[in-house]
Image (cartoon, rainbow, N blue to C red):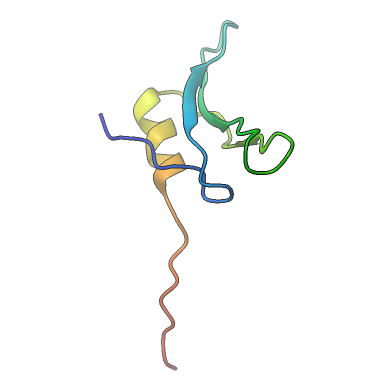
Length: 68
């Protein structure tokens, strides 16, 4: 299983969590309270598997600039 990248907004550590309802969704949440004076509370939309949740969380926007 891939490692989770830190939060893209605050750099905080994140947790992989599972809901306890009948749907059993997986998600990644940052609850960093150290850097911002409050809770970052960034999360992804739920996924049906751990692997999908990790893949979605670890996806980052590219910063490459393409010439036209």
